[in-house]
Image (cartoon, rainbow, N blue to C red; front, side):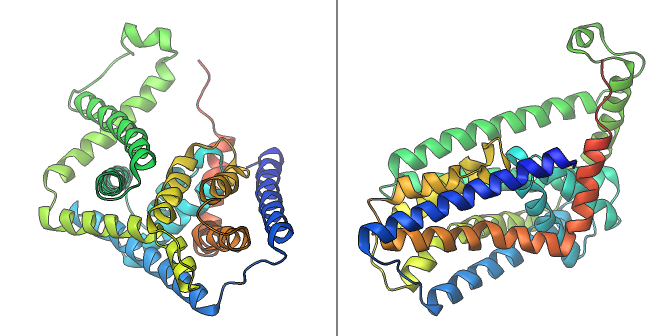
Length: 334
Protein backbone atom coordinates (compact mmCIF):
# COMPACT_ATOMS: atom_id res chain seq x y z
CA UNK A 1 0.00 0.00 0.00
CA UNK A 2 1.28 3.44 -0.94
CA UNK A 3 1.08 6.70 0.99
CA UNK A 4 -2.20 7.69 -0.68
CA UNK A 5 -3.89 4.47 0.40
CA UNK A 6 -2.61 4.85 3.96
CA UNK A 7 -3.90 8.42 3.99
CA UNK A 8 -7.35 7.10 3.00
CA UNK A 9 -7.19 4.56 5.84
CA UNK A 10 -6.22 7.28 8.33
CA UNK A 11 -8.95 9.66 7.16
CA UNK A 12 -11.58 6.91 7.28
CA UNK A 13 -10.64 5.89 10.80
CA UNK A 14 -10.51 9.53 11.94
CA UNK A 15 -13.99 10.10 10.50
CA UNK A 16 -15.30 7.05 12.38
CA UNK A 17 -13.71 8.19 15.65
CA UNK A 18 -14.95 11.76 15.17
CA UNK A 19 -18.51 10.54 14.66
CA UNK A 20 -18.23 8.32 17.75
CA UNK A 21 -17.00 11.32 19.77
CA UNK A 22 -19.92 13.40 18.46
CA UNK A 23 -22.42 10.71 19.53
CA UNK A 24 -20.81 10.53 22.98
CA UNK A 25 -20.98 14.34 23.27
CA UNK A 26 -24.64 14.41 22.25
CA UNK A 27 -25.40 11.72 24.82
CA UNK A 28 -23.65 13.80 27.48
CA UNK A 29 -25.55 16.95 26.50
CA UNK A 30 -28.95 15.28 26.53
CA UNK A 31 -28.61 13.43 29.84
CA UNK A 32 -25.72 15.11 31.67
CA UNK A 33 -23.70 11.89 31.89
CA UNK A 34 -22.48 8.90 29.90
CA UNK A 35 -23.19 5.45 31.28
CA UNK A 36 -19.98 3.67 32.27
CA UNK A 37 -20.16 -0.04 31.51
CA UNK A 38 -19.22 -2.24 34.52
CA UNK A 39 -16.40 -4.77 34.46
CA UNK A 40 -18.89 -7.64 34.05
CA UNK A 41 -19.96 -6.29 30.66
CA UNK A 42 -16.36 -6.01 29.51
CA UNK A 43 -15.55 -9.49 30.79
CA UNK A 44 -18.50 -10.98 28.87
CA UNK A 45 -17.67 -9.08 25.67
CA UNK A 46 -14.01 -10.10 25.89
CA UNK A 47 -15.05 -13.71 26.45
CA UNK A 48 -17.28 -13.55 23.37
CA UNK A 49 -14.34 -12.14 21.35
CA UNK A 50 -12.03 -14.96 22.46
CA UNK A 51 -14.65 -17.66 21.83
CA UNK A 52 -15.45 -16.26 18.39
CA UNK A 53 -11.77 -16.13 17.42
CA UNK A 54 -11.20 -19.71 18.58
CA UNK A 55 -14.41 -20.93 16.91
CA UNK A 56 -13.62 -19.29 13.59
CA UNK A 57 -10.06 -20.59 13.51
CA UNK A 58 -11.32 -24.07 14.35
CA UNK A 59 -13.91 -23.78 11.58
CA UNK A 60 -11.17 -23.03 9.03
CA UNK A 61 -9.16 -26.02 10.26
CA UNK A 62 -12.17 -28.37 10.10
CA UNK A 63 -13.01 -27.03 6.64
CA UNK A 64 -9.49 -27.95 5.53
CA UNK A 65 -9.87 -31.31 7.26
CA UNK A 66 -13.12 -31.92 5.37
CA UNK A 67 -11.21 -31.29 2.13
CA UNK A 68 -8.38 -33.60 3.29
CA UNK A 69 -5.93 -30.71 3.41
CA UNK A 70 -3.57 -30.66 6.43
CA UNK A 71 -3.64 -27.33 8.28
CA UNK A 72 -2.41 -26.54 11.79
CA UNK A 73 -4.86 -24.87 14.17
CA UNK A 74 -2.48 -21.95 14.82
CA UNK A 75 -2.19 -21.37 11.07
CA UNK A 76 -6.01 -21.47 10.75
CA UNK A 77 -6.34 -18.78 13.44
CA UNK A 78 -3.71 -16.67 11.65
CA UNK A 79 -5.69 -17.06 8.41
CA UNK A 80 -8.85 -15.73 10.11
CA UNK A 81 -7.21 -12.82 11.93
CA UNK A 82 -4.98 -11.95 8.98
CA UNK A 83 -8.09 -11.69 6.83
CA UNK A 84 -9.67 -9.40 9.43
CA UNK A 85 -6.64 -7.10 9.33
CA UNK A 86 -6.54 -7.06 5.54
CA UNK A 87 -10.27 -6.35 5.38
CA UNK A 88 -10.04 -3.53 7.94
CA UNK A 89 -7.47 -1.45 6.04
CA UNK A 90 -8.90 -1.82 2.53
CA UNK A 91 -12.08 -0.42 0.90
CA UNK A 92 -14.95 -2.88 0.70
CA UNK A 93 -12.88 -5.45 2.63
CA UNK A 94 -11.01 -6.13 -0.63
CA UNK A 95 -7.80 -7.15 1.15
CA UNK A 96 -9.32 -10.03 3.12
CA UNK A 97 -8.87 -12.86 0.61
CA UNK A 98 -5.36 -11.88 -0.64
CA UNK A 99 -4.26 -11.73 3.00
CA UNK A 100 -5.76 -15.13 3.84
CA UNK A 101 -4.25 -16.65 0.70
CA UNK A 102 -0.74 -15.46 1.57
CA UNK A 103 -1.05 -16.69 5.17
CA UNK A 104 -2.06 -20.10 3.81
CA UNK A 105 0.84 -20.03 1.35
CA UNK A 106 3.31 -19.24 4.14
CA UNK A 107 1.82 -22.12 6.13
CA UNK A 108 2.90 -24.45 3.32
CA UNK A 109 -0.48 -24.88 1.58
CA UNK A 110 -0.20 -25.11 -2.21
CA UNK A 111 -2.16 -22.78 -4.49
CA UNK A 112 -5.00 -25.12 -5.50
CA UNK A 113 -5.74 -26.37 -1.94
CA UNK A 114 -5.50 -22.80 -0.61
CA UNK A 115 -8.07 -21.56 -3.13
CA UNK A 116 -10.31 -24.49 -2.26
CA UNK A 117 -10.07 -23.73 1.47
CA UNK A 118 -10.92 -20.05 0.88
CA UNK A 119 -13.89 -20.83 -1.36
CA UNK A 120 -15.22 -23.46 1.05
CA UNK A 121 -14.86 -21.04 3.99
CA UNK A 122 -16.72 -18.35 2.04
CA UNK A 123 -19.49 -20.78 1.11
CA UNK A 124 -19.88 -21.84 4.76
CA UNK A 125 -20.07 -18.18 5.82
CA UNK A 126 -22.76 -17.36 3.27
CA UNK A 127 -24.94 -20.37 4.11
CA UNK A 128 -24.56 -19.67 7.84
CA UNK A 129 -25.60 -16.04 7.37
CA UNK A 130 -28.64 -17.03 5.33
CA UNK A 131 -29.64 -19.50 8.06
CA UNK A 132 -29.19 -16.94 10.86
CA UNK A 133 -31.13 -14.30 8.89
CA UNK A 134 -33.94 -16.78 8.25
CA UNK A 135 -34.20 -17.59 11.96
CA UNK A 136 -34.28 -13.88 12.84
CA UNK A 137 -36.85 -13.11 10.16
CA UNK A 138 -39.29 -15.92 10.97
CA UNK A 139 -38.86 -16.51 14.70
CA UNK A 140 -38.43 -12.96 16.02
CA UNK A 141 -39.95 -9.56 15.34
CA UNK A 142 -36.82 -8.59 13.35
CA UNK A 143 -38.94 -8.91 10.22
CA UNK A 144 -38.08 -6.32 7.61
CA UNK A 145 -34.42 -5.77 8.54
CA UNK A 146 -33.59 -9.45 8.78
CA UNK A 147 -35.57 -10.13 5.60
CA UNK A 148 -33.62 -7.42 3.81
CA UNK A 149 -30.37 -9.02 4.93
CA UNK A 150 -31.58 -12.37 3.57
CA UNK A 151 -32.14 -10.69 0.21
CA UNK A 152 -28.68 -9.08 0.16
CA UNK A 153 -26.77 -12.11 1.42
CA UNK A 154 -28.87 -14.57 -0.56
CA UNK A 155 -28.32 -12.63 -3.78
CA UNK A 156 -24.61 -12.49 -3.15
CA UNK A 157 -24.57 -16.20 -2.32
CA UNK A 158 -26.29 -17.02 -5.62
CA UNK A 159 -23.76 -14.83 -7.46
CA UNK A 160 -20.80 -16.55 -5.79
CA UNK A 161 -22.27 -20.02 -6.35
CA UNK A 162 -23.02 -19.19 -9.99
CA UNK A 163 -19.51 -17.82 -10.49
CA UNK A 164 -17.99 -20.90 -8.87
CA UNK A 165 -20.22 -23.19 -10.93
CA UNK A 166 -19.12 -21.48 -14.14
CA UNK A 167 -15.48 -21.77 -13.07
CA UNK A 168 -15.89 -25.48 -12.32
CA UNK A 169 -17.54 -26.07 -15.71
CA UNK A 170 -14.70 -24.25 -17.49
CA UNK A 171 -12.15 -26.01 -15.32
CA UNK A 172 -13.53 -29.36 -16.43
CA UNK A 173 -12.66 -28.51 -20.01
CA UNK A 174 -9.06 -28.65 -21.15
CA UNK A 175 -8.82 -25.12 -22.50
CA UNK A 176 -5.76 -24.58 -24.69
CA UNK A 177 -4.62 -22.12 -27.31
CA UNK A 178 -5.58 -18.44 -27.71
CA UNK A 179 -8.58 -16.85 -25.94
CA UNK A 180 -11.99 -17.49 -27.51
CA UNK A 181 -13.21 -14.74 -29.81
CA UNK A 182 -16.15 -13.82 -27.54
CA UNK A 183 -13.75 -12.93 -24.71
CA UNK A 184 -11.61 -10.51 -26.73
CA UNK A 185 -14.13 -7.62 -26.63
CA UNK A 186 -13.97 -7.93 -22.82
CA UNK A 187 -10.24 -7.15 -22.85
CA UNK A 188 -9.10 -10.77 -22.34
CA UNK A 189 -5.88 -10.78 -24.37
CA UNK A 190 -3.26 -13.53 -24.52
CA UNK A 191 -1.55 -12.54 -21.25
CA UNK A 192 -4.75 -12.47 -19.23
CA UNK A 193 -5.93 -15.66 -20.89
CA UNK A 194 -2.78 -17.44 -19.69
CA UNK A 195 -3.48 -16.22 -16.15
CA UNK A 196 -7.08 -17.46 -16.42
CA UNK A 197 -5.87 -20.83 -17.68
CA UNK A 198 -3.49 -21.12 -14.71
CA UNK A 199 -6.37 -20.33 -12.35
CA UNK A 200 -8.55 -22.91 -14.06
CA UNK A 201 -5.81 -25.52 -13.68
CA UNK A 202 -5.70 -24.73 -9.94
CA UNK A 203 -9.49 -25.09 -9.73
CA UNK A 204 -9.32 -28.34 -11.67
CA UNK A 205 -6.73 -29.59 -9.20
CA UNK A 206 -9.02 -28.69 -6.32
CA UNK A 207 -12.11 -30.35 -7.78
CA UNK A 208 -10.82 -33.79 -6.79
CA UNK A 209 -10.44 -32.59 -3.21
CA UNK A 210 -14.04 -31.34 -3.23
CA UNK A 211 -15.31 -34.68 -4.58
CA UNK A 212 -13.44 -36.54 -1.84
CA UNK A 213 -14.64 -34.23 0.96
CA UNK A 214 -15.60 -35.84 4.29
CA UNK A 215 -19.30 -35.23 5.05
CA UNK A 216 -18.84 -35.53 8.82
CA UNK A 217 -16.06 -32.93 8.92
CA UNK A 218 -18.10 -30.67 6.63
CA UNK A 219 -21.00 -30.82 9.10
CA UNK A 220 -18.69 -29.93 11.99
CA UNK A 221 -17.27 -27.00 10.00
CA UNK A 222 -20.78 -25.77 9.22
CA UNK A 223 -21.85 -25.98 12.87
CA UNK A 224 -18.74 -24.00 13.86
CA UNK A 225 -19.56 -21.43 11.16
CA UNK A 226 -23.07 -20.90 12.53
CA UNK A 227 -21.61 -20.64 16.06
CA UNK A 228 -19.07 -18.04 14.94
CA UNK A 229 -21.78 -15.88 13.31
CA UNK A 230 -23.92 -16.14 16.46
CA UNK A 231 -20.96 -15.12 18.62
CA UNK A 232 -20.26 -12.09 16.44
CA UNK A 233 -23.84 -11.00 17.07
CA UNK A 234 -23.60 -11.66 20.83
CA UNK A 235 -21.17 -8.81 21.56
CA UNK A 236 -23.75 -6.05 21.94
CA UNK A 237 -26.19 -8.13 24.06
CA UNK A 238 -23.21 -9.08 26.28
CA UNK A 239 -22.39 -5.40 26.82
CA UNK A 240 -26.00 -4.36 27.45
CA UNK A 241 -27.21 -7.25 29.59
CA UNK A 242 -23.85 -7.48 31.35
CA UNK A 243 -24.49 -3.89 32.46
CA UNK A 244 -27.87 -4.83 33.90
CA UNK A 245 -29.75 -2.75 31.31
CA UNK A 246 -33.12 -3.93 30.08
CA UNK A 247 -33.64 -3.77 26.32
CA UNK A 248 -35.36 -5.91 23.68
CA UNK A 249 -33.03 -8.56 22.29
CA UNK A 250 -34.06 -8.46 18.63
CA UNK A 251 -32.70 -5.00 17.69
CA UNK A 252 -29.51 -5.71 19.68
CA UNK A 253 -28.91 -8.64 17.32
CA UNK A 254 -30.44 -7.49 14.04
CA UNK A 255 -28.69 -4.11 13.84
CA UNK A 256 -25.19 -5.54 14.45
CA UNK A 257 -25.98 -8.15 11.78
CA UNK A 258 -26.89 -5.41 9.34
CA UNK A 259 -23.90 -3.22 10.22
CA UNK A 260 -21.22 -5.94 10.42
CA UNK A 261 -22.13 -7.75 7.22
CA UNK A 262 -24.09 -5.19 5.21
CA UNK A 263 -21.47 -2.56 6.09
CA UNK A 264 -18.83 -4.64 4.32
CA UNK A 265 -19.81 -2.90 1.07
CA UNK A 266 -18.64 0.49 2.39
CA UNK A 267 -16.20 2.00 -0.15
CA UNK A 268 -13.75 3.17 2.53
CA UNK A 269 -11.71 1.20 5.11
CA UNK A 270 -13.50 0.66 8.42
CA UNK A 271 -16.71 2.19 7.07
CA UNK A 272 -15.62 5.82 7.42
CA UNK A 273 -18.27 6.47 10.08
CA UNK A 274 -21.13 4.71 8.26
CA UNK A 275 -21.26 1.94 10.88
CA UNK A 276 -21.30 4.45 13.75
CA UNK A 277 -24.07 6.45 12.08
CA UNK A 278 -26.12 3.30 11.42
CA UNK A 279 -25.67 2.14 15.02
CA UNK A 280 -26.86 5.47 16.45
CA UNK A 281 -29.75 5.69 13.99
CA UNK A 282 -30.96 2.12 14.42
CA UNK A 283 -30.75 1.93 18.21
CA UNK A 284 -31.70 5.50 19.15
CA UNK A 285 -35.19 4.34 20.27
CA UNK A 286 -33.91 1.19 21.94
CA UNK A 287 -31.17 2.56 24.23
CA UNK A 288 -31.04 5.68 26.35
CA UNK A 289 -28.68 8.31 24.81
CA UNK A 290 -26.22 7.96 27.69
CA UNK A 291 -26.16 4.17 27.26
CA UNK A 292 -26.09 4.39 23.46
CA UNK A 293 -22.86 6.40 23.47
CA UNK A 294 -20.91 3.99 25.66
CA UNK A 295 -22.39 0.93 23.95
CA UNK A 296 -21.33 2.23 20.54
CA UNK A 297 -17.72 2.87 21.57
CA UNK A 298 -17.24 -0.48 23.29
CA UNK A 299 -19.18 -2.46 20.67
CA UNK A 300 -16.86 -1.09 17.97
CA UNK A 301 -13.84 -1.95 20.09
CA UNK A 302 -14.90 -5.55 20.72
CA UNK A 303 -16.35 -6.17 17.23
CA UNK A 304 -13.81 -4.34 15.05
CA UNK A 305 -10.76 -2.73 16.64
CA UNK A 306 -9.75 -5.80 18.67
CA UNK A 307 -9.79 -7.90 15.50
CA UNK A 308 -7.74 -5.24 13.74
CA UNK A 309 -5.17 -5.24 16.56
CA UNK A 310 -5.06 -9.05 16.87
CA UNK A 311 -4.68 -9.43 13.11
CA UNK A 312 -1.85 -6.88 13.06
CA UNK A 313 -0.06 -8.73 15.86
CA UNK A 314 -0.32 -12.29 14.53
CA UNK A 315 -0.20 -11.74 10.76
CA UNK A 316 0.41 -8.04 10.10
CA UNK A 317 3.72 -8.50 8.27
CA UNK A 318 2.29 -11.21 6.04
CA UNK A 319 -0.83 -9.18 5.26
CA UNK A 320 1.18 -6.11 4.33
CA UNK A 321 3.24 -8.19 1.91
CA UNK A 322 0.02 -9.41 0.31
CA UNK A 323 -1.38 -5.88 0.00
CA UNK A 324 1.89 -4.45 -1.31
CA UNK A 325 2.17 -7.23 -3.88
CA UNK A 326 -1.36 -6.60 -5.17
CA UNK A 327 -0.56 -2.88 -5.38
CA UNK A 328 2.82 -3.18 -7.09
CA UNK A 329 1.83 -5.91 -9.55
CA UNK A 330 -1.60 -5.07 -10.98
CA UNK A 331 -3.13 -7.06 -13.79
CA UNK A 332 -1.65 -6.23 -17.21
CA UNK A 333 -3.52 -3.67 -19.25
CA UNK A 334 -5.38 -4.79 -22.37
